[in-house]
Each structure stands twice: as structure tokens, then as C-alpha cells.
Length: 209
Image (cartoon, rainbow, N blue to C red; front, side, top):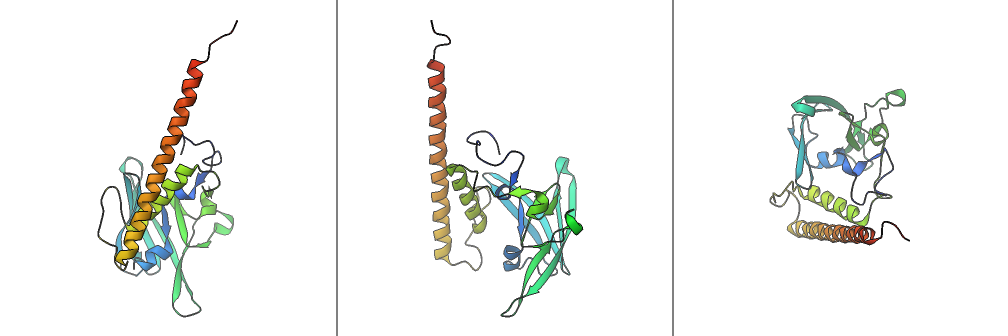
């Protein structure tokens, strides 16, 4: 991200996890997407921009495919491991196939799209945005996170997600709208400050006697 209000948005040359497409093993597992034989798509929405990756799960492997630059199709296979829980059952993790020490192989919950592959945060060299972002950026990030949790992409408003109580859906929807309103107000204030600064500079004399 660059441009308006980006002075402390992130460290130079470092990208943030909040603005990378991510695969979350916990989220996919709760929706049944990590069961062998399942196929579908994962979508991400940032404002009005929507992107997606096709998924297919087979025997502890997640097969991915998406369109890269100039409609080129990119494919990848991510290993899945399941770790037993103390109270029974198991929890799925992804194995990172990055090029770190010993081939990386980290067992992680989330993988991020970086360099045309889904890798762990360390291999992707990502940082968290929170220490460097402006208030309006933090509010927009929270709103986007809530929209994704509700399954809302672009301007479409779907039915209540399966298994989610109506009261929870209403609470999250209200929180998302409130966060986006706060972000818009903060961004407007920032624009007014910049406009005032430009106006003050334009009124200064070019030289003095």
C-alpha cells in the first residue's frame, strides 16, 4: 500500500499479512473444505475487488489453482497433517513448502500468497500491519475481516452463513458497518488535513524582501 496516509503504514520493502491472500486451515476445516473429495473455491474481497482460488482436497493434500498474470493458470499442492487433540479428534495444519532452512516444512495454520506460491509468514517475509498503520487503515482492515467472516464479497449480501445464529450475523454485520463508517470518517479527516496543508503552502510568498 502506498499513497495517502502511508507514512507509517509499513516498513519500507516489507509487505503485511493483512493485505495478502491467506488460506486458514481452521476456517477451511470448520467449513468441511479439508475433507477428501471436497472441491470448491476460496474468495477474498478488498473493497469491490474480489479474487478467488480453486481448491480440491485429496488424501491429506490440498490442490490449488488460480489465474496469475495474463490469465496464466498456476497450480500448487499443499500437504496437510492432522495433530491429535487432548480431548479427542484432530486439528489440521498446513506444511509450508518454502525454501527456508531444511526446506522450511513449518507446521502452520495460515499460508499467504507470495511469489506465486502459498507460503508461511516467515518464508513470505511478511510483517503485521498493526504497529505501522493509521487509524483509518486499521478500521478498514477490521471491516474487511468481518466481511470475509460473514461471507460477503463485493456488493453482494448473502444469506446468513450456515451454522451461524441470526443474532451473531446481525452483530457482526453491525460491527462491520460501524468499522467501515469510522474508516471513512477518519479518511475524510485526513484528506481535509492534507487539503489545508496544501492551501497553507500555496498562500506562502515565493520570496521575501
